Image 1: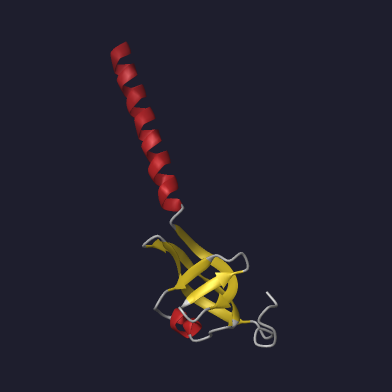
Image 2: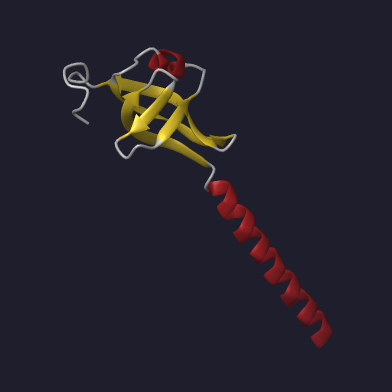
Length: 106
């Protein structure tokens, strides 16, 4: 009887450890409804106020955002890891009205 309890206990611990390891790894690679403010660069990236660069996905609203080079924008979208680089698939965006007046005003 003790052998059965030990086997089930070991199995439960191994299963919990597997969920912890793989669950946290996946969660770090995908964020839905992320809000990011930053400047659009000529190489189709959005660089936030901390200098972190996000590739802008070539789909939907992202295609519009890519044309706003030098503008300060706020985007909402899904951030994922593509090839080791954070990439945002833009769901919607807005251009800050003062973004063209002073590009250093972040």
